[in-house]
Structures are given as structure tokens and as C-alpha cells.
Amino acid sequence: MADTEQPEVPSEPQSRHVTYCGVCTLPPEYCEYGGTVKKCQDWLQKAYPAMYEQIWSPEALEAATASLSVEAQKRAAKDAQKKAAQAEKAEQKQADKMANSVITIKRVERNKRKFVTAVSGLEAFGLDLKKVAKEFGKKFATGSSVTKVPSGGEEIVVQGDVSDEIEEFLLEKYKDIPEDNIELVDDKKKKASS
Amino acid sequence: MVASIQTAPKSKLKSSVQRSLRQSLLTTYPLLHRYIDEILPKKGSLEAMKLPDRCTLYVLDGEPLFFQQDTTTLLPHLKLVHRFPAAFPSIRIDRGAIRFVLSGATLMAPGLTSTGGRLPSGILTVRTEDGAGEGLDEEDRWTRELEKGEPVIVRAEGKTEACAVGFLVMGTKDVKDKGKGPVIEDAHYLGDGLWKLATD
Image 1 (cartoon, rainbow over the protein chains, first blue to last red):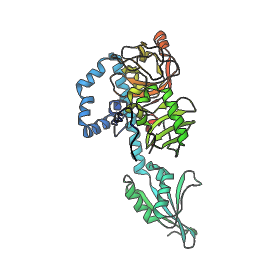
Image 2: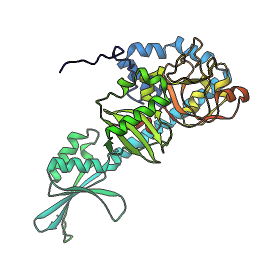
Image 3: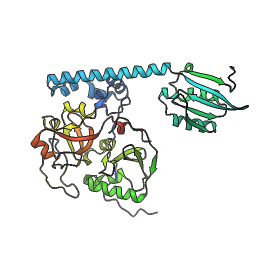
Image 4: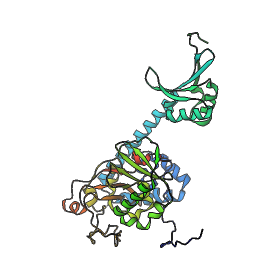
């Protein structure tokens, strides 16, 4: 194929590449409004020291705040503080929730020697049930779906007895789930405890 | 924009739709002529993502490009604005207003009329087909006066990147004359649901 078409303008890439903060996803210069300032600073210092210098050096900060009136500065500072505190609190809460919540993997007898595996409690770890269900289905090559439980809330039901494999899979794939928080339960139909 | 949006499935667009989209982009943003082949390569397969509130986001190779509320004019996604800052008309807000805009407040006129803000200088009054002569002057002002309802990029004092995109509810001339009232409502700003939306 001969390249007959001559582009009118030299087609060099003209787009700029913008770096975004790895913590709050904003451009680093806007990190101060993101609510996770401290973390953003640490991240930037590690990842892009040059940019960190440019944005967070004392001179730059001074130049930036000089144009504001003292009162406005105070207000902004107070606001930022409040926001940071809020973000921290939310994070703490999230961490707490994660530490306390338990993932239950239940083996339910469906028909004498046939089982389904019901997984509940995943949503506490910020996982999208629908997506995880799909993952399970793919991994174990079985049917896997999200169903509502009578007590409200949702769980993932996977066909077949894959409780051990699910535990392994979860631990490997989602590193922020502690092993102690996964509970295996055997649920017989006749209410006989195992 | 709403605070958080769930990812929705993407669907490929027909090439005819893609073509008309490209056309409407060029009419709305004449300055895009220079970049359009890079933003929307002829071969690329554009995808649309349907979001709540009849909002559609156009994605190319996992990069968000434009979005559309109902069937109104297309607005560029901020990530695109950051890539091609010179392609869209812009105004600048003062430092004090940034935190309000970034928490989703309506942009009000005083944030633009103060010393840190920049409104268009108004040297050019007529809008040309290819956007000739439009751009930022030495003072960081857009050279053309912007009308009510026009899409506009909001930059911020002391920052290089833009922080919001929206439609003017008041022409820039009126803003200068009145000096109060809302200027942009319901903008797409840094850190909102659309910004945080995962597109790949």
C-alpha cells in the first residue's frame, strides 16, 4: 500500500501529558483541595520530587497565599483543616469496618451430594459484588450469581462446592482482606451442626 | 455533576454516529481543528457510556473525551482539557473561589471580576469559523467575549491546569457589567463523579 495521502500538518503528537496524583487523582497542584493533603504530599515527594519542590516549597506556598487577604486565608485554612479531619475520620471508619467485618463462605447442601457455595460480606471490603461474581464464575467455570438474601443485602452464590478455593482466591486476589476475616461455614439442610 | 457515578457498560458507536459527532465537535469548538485527528483518529473506535440522568460519556481507548447531558452541546472531559488546554475558550477564577468550585458550588461572578480572576478582554467580538485570532493574550485573558450558553473552561489563579467545565448562564460581558450572580451552574469539576469514573 503506497502512502499517497500527505497530511497537511505534521502529525506530531500535540497533547500534553498531565501527571495526576496517585492518592486523590487530581492534578497535584489541586491536592490541597482533595482532603488528603498529607498523603498526597508524601506520594508526590516519592514519585515526583521535582514537582513536589515546585508545589510545596515554602516560597511557592507563600507566593500562592500572598494574594489572599488575611481573613480569607484563615477561613481557607480552617476549611481545609475541617476537610482533612473529615477525610481522616471517614478513612478510619472504613478501616474499622474492614477490620471488623467477616466474609462468610457457606457451603449449602442443595441435593444430597450437590452443593452451592454462598459468599456474603464482600461488600464491606469495597468490592463490587457483580464483578466478583463474574470473576468467580470465570475462575471456577461454574454458574455464579448475586442473589438477595431474605434478611436484606446480597450474597454471591456459586454452584458447586468451591469454598476452599474461594478462600484461597480471595486472599490472593484482594490483598487487603485479612485471612482471619474469612469464615468457612458448613450448612446442612437438616439443621444438623457439623 | 453528581458526587459519584457507577461504571456502566460501554457500547461501540457506529462510524456514522462517530462522524456526525466529530462534525458537531468542530462546529462547537472551532479551535479543535488542529487537534481533531489526534483526539478522534479516523480509525479509532469510539465508545459511549450511558450514565445516570441521561448523560452520555464518549470514551476512546479508555480515555474519556467528551460528555453530553441529554442532547445538549458536548462538553470536553477535564482530562481532555488538560491534554489540549489551548483548544477551548476559558475564563479564570481567583484563588479564593477554587475551593468552592471544587466542592461543586455554582460559580459566581465575584470570583471572576476580582483581581485574581480573568474575564475575556473582548478584542474580538465576532465568532469566526476557524477560531482565528482566538486564544489567550499576555494577561491570560481570552480574546473573544463569550456568549450566554457557551461552553467554557474554568482555570484558576496560580494553577496551570483547568479545574472545571461548564456552560455560561450569563454572557461574559454581563458578568463584567453586573458583577454578581451565578455564572456557571452544574459544572463538571475536578474530583466529581465524572472525574472519578473508571473508564477502562
